[in-house]
Amino acid sequence: MKVIHIIFLLFFMSSCAYRWGNTTRSLPGGYRQVSIPIFKNKTQETGVEVAFTNSLVQEFQRSTVARVIEEDKADAKIVGEIEIVRYEPGGPKISDQSNYLPQGTVLATVYNTILVVNLKMLRKSDNTELWAGSFRGERSYNAPQVTLSGVNSVNPLYNLSARRQNIEAISVDLMAEAFDRLTENF
Image (cartoon, rainbow, N blue to C red; front, side, top):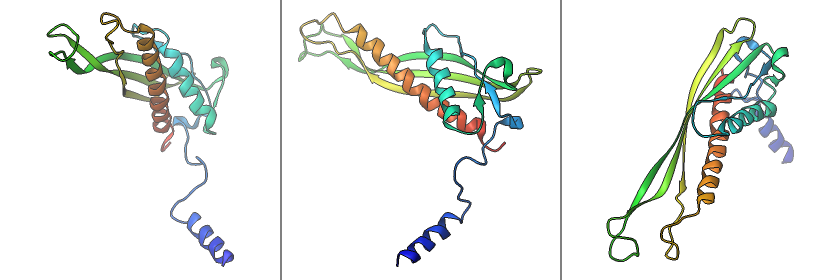
C-alpha cells in the first residue's frame, strides 16, 4: 500500500508543470549579479529608504536568481525611489452627550499609511533601463486613544512606533511583489 502511495505521489509531482524551486525565474537581460543602492527618499518621512532597501536585498538573498554585490562589480543595478508616504485619518468618531469630549469634537480612530515606490533596473555599462515598475501599498493602524484622565494628550511614541511598524510591513509586502514582477518571464 505504501508503494502505491509513493508512486501516486511521484506521478502527481512530476505532472502539470510542477517544478522545484525558481528555475524559470531570471532578471531582465539574464544578469546574475546586481547591486541595490540605498533607495532615494523623495518624502519628508526620514528613514523609510532603509526599510525598503533591506526588504529588497532580503528577497534576493532568499532566492538563487541573482546575487547582490557591490556596485562597482555588478553588471546591473536596481534603483528604488520612495515617491509618497502619506497618512490619512479614517473612521472619525464624533463626540456626543455620552462621552467626555467637548461638543462637536472629531477624532480619527484609524490612520491609513499609503506608500508609493518606483523601481528601475538599469544596465550598468550604459544606464539603459531594462525594467521599471511602480508599487503602491496601504495599511491601517489604530490612532492613539484619548483617555478620560488626559483628554488633551495622547501617546506620541505610540503613533511613531505604529507608523514605523506599518512602513516595515508595507516594505516587506511591496518588495516581495516587486521581486516577483521583476523576475517573472525573462
